[in-house]
Image (cartoon, rainbow, N blue to C red; front, side):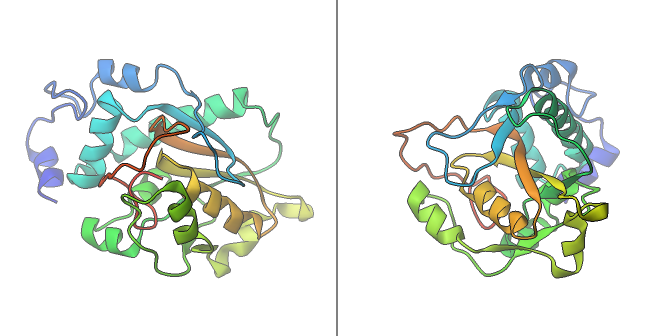
Length: 238
């Protein structure tokens, strides 16, 4: 909250490098948006949609997300929304899923209730504003920090559902199957996005793509790493 107030009354400093007079300076924005691409975790959990991100979770992107989620710099939300829009454009043009036709719905992965209370807002929900279908937690889950990919999968199994009042939003007019793009801030193991995709697919929607600001670059053989920066159902990066 204090950081948000300071952003209003003091000249801003770049969240990526500290350069004065910009929320995010052109050089940091260029670093983040240099190469949107498909960056799936390895191994990928069953059911994970094709996963695209703007960049790796390091450098300016990591500092920007930490400032936004953990240090109260909520003024960064429009910048991150713009990053996700660029990722979506790149994914729709260059993914292996082929041409996407018909209506497209953006669905954010929700924050854990405890994380929402601590931060006072849902970071991913804010940057994915305009979504017409929403996910929510169906049950409580344990803290994901320090869990292996297998433990994360067990922790999150069945943990998400589509809000009942909005279920009709995931089917296009005329009975055609709607296309849903899942949105999160960071992907690590892919378990949370796979669980979100399962919940949305149960409504009859197609979920070909998942979009994130950054990917941790987790690869086969990595050990579980403790991380305190995540959103979603009480976890570190997905």
